[in-house]
Image (cartoon, rainbow, N blue to C red; front, top):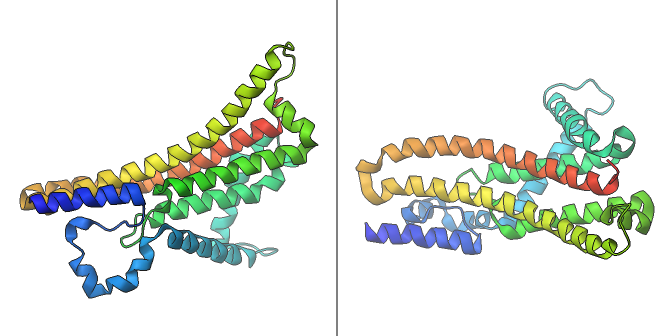
Length: 263
């Protein structure tokens, strides 16, 4: 039992510190050898999962493109409903309507689907959860930061960026202080987006692994923990959708605050 417990602890430590695998070490991976573990090892890397998610996104875009100018049905209808949801409930309310928000719709549609697919694929055996890697979530948050600065500059140049970081009507001595605080706040939002997605996805997976490992460690007496693991798995599906939505909505709010600080 001590060997199995040690194997599980080593796996969790490896997953948290290195983010390369989503396979349960308590199984000792004997069954993977029979399935061709060496051939499947490519799916242990987050870089592979990012490429896989990108391919799925491209296929989805291609499928949706076929319905342009036609009455959508099937997957086309689903994609249309999804686009309308992101446009009408996420983008337009935070960008002051269609005039300013229309050009941001593709960005938020893409980022939501990217995070959602990465989250859901991480729940499939043999795949790793790319969004459980802080480097991946930091990359996504950096994309948000770049989009926020670019959108503000595109809106009105350097003056618009200064106006977004410096509220109007302040006394002269307060302006440097407030400007510094707003700059720190912008990077704090980026950090918050990074850690929120990373911590929620990684934490849920570690708890799920712990529940499953109890059976391997303690045997039949811990079988009821499998029922808890099934409930946690279903809850993780909900969390996968929720975290994609939260990241997208917060990004829309933060970017909208910079593009239209008067609102």
